[in-house]
Length: 64
Image 1 (cartoon, rainbow, N blue to C red):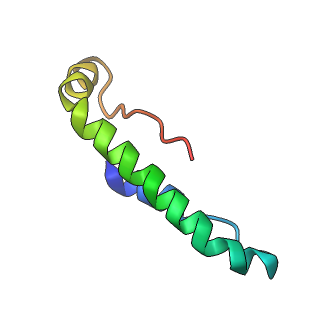
Image 2 (cartoon, helix red, strand yellow):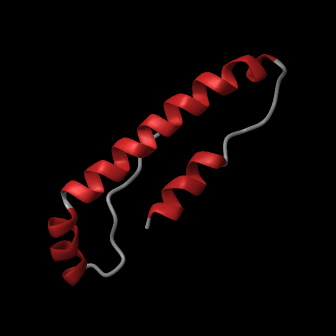
């Protein structure tokens, strides 16, 4: 479950030199967003389990 979200974070494009300076900021922001997603999934895990009874494999979308 969390692996899918984390892999989505790690698939950022790698073009341009100016991106190097922003990588640290983007990485920190991405990590914060992932941690928030993880916390929300933990908080609502009972509701997620109930939804998955009717929609196996469903997970809340991760918006980066």
